[in-house]
Image 1 (cartoon, rainbow, N blue to C red):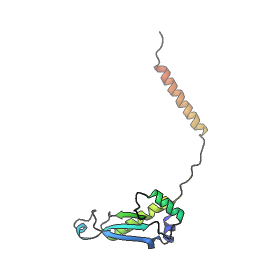
Image 2 (cartoon, rainbow, N blue to C red):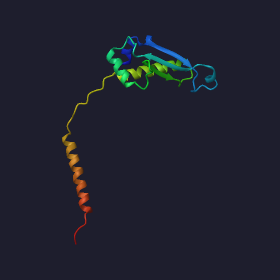
Image 3 (cartoon, helix red, strand yellow):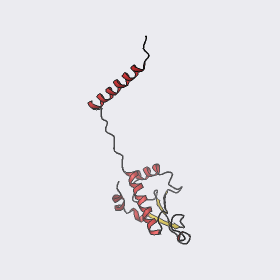
Image 4 (cartoon, rainbow, N blue to C red):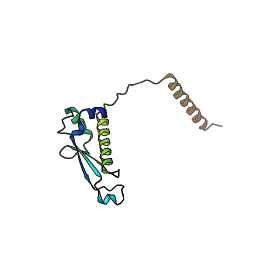
Length: 138
């Protein structure tokens, strides 16, 4: 699944944002302005995800999900609340897209003729090296 597909499902309507005091960059501004943004997305009650997608997210994101099924993403790297909000949204969409994108299946291959010959040549060189190290009877 791509980020564009998530946007088309209107996931933005289900996101909740809360702000609080940040501990990140910003100097004295950090002490006065709520720049830290916390994004919350309730996976269980989501209308834009299928049941299968919800199950997958619950399995892969179990450490980031609260007891009531909310995915929580925090951003405090920017100096402004708007910058942190955008950063949190990017993190959210990247995370969801990465998890819901099916992994490519590995297509098994066999070794090439050149790779077999190279392996045998290396074995021959190693064997020669070891025979030279042996003690000789005088």
